[in-house]
Length: 232
Image 1 (tube, rainbow, N blue to C red):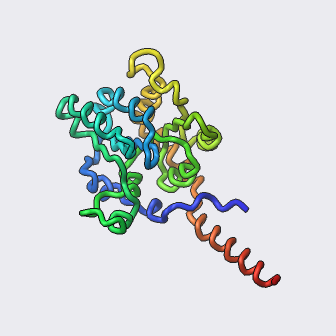
Image 2: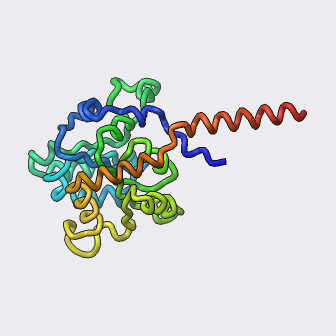
């Protein structure tokens, strides 16, 4: 049985203006969401730090770096940027989803990961299983960097073949030359500068969404449980 990947329903319902306001982001320029899971992705974090001087003149960057200690050196690097570029960079080690902030007794409910998806025009991320549900739910085009030590390429290729994402190999992100000539920057620049391509990729991504995946999965499990009881 194929149900699709269950995701929070709020991902389908985000308001862009409200989501951007939660992070203090402007309506323009485009917003690039960078994330690598709760623990982050160090190679992506390093690549983004190298690319910030080239990305921030043309985009706002919302960066969820993980809770493995990268926040300190990322903040130190960002502090060396010109003030006008620093204002376009938002760095968080972690964002909770929905009501989790209150459930975990945070001092004040901050912006959520769901709102980060709502605020973004484009994502840069790994391609774990959840990306197959989250990116289509949010209608986000993406540049995917599969984690090289597990089988994430299959997930990335599924979205790439359907025109919903581009893919860059982890070891090839920054290439061998200047950061602004690297494969990662060229792909990000291509999508940041072309709203029509982003719109096409967004439509193709949304076409893959399965809004009722959680309900279908629950129904199947309940049917299976009922069937088991009736045979005893």
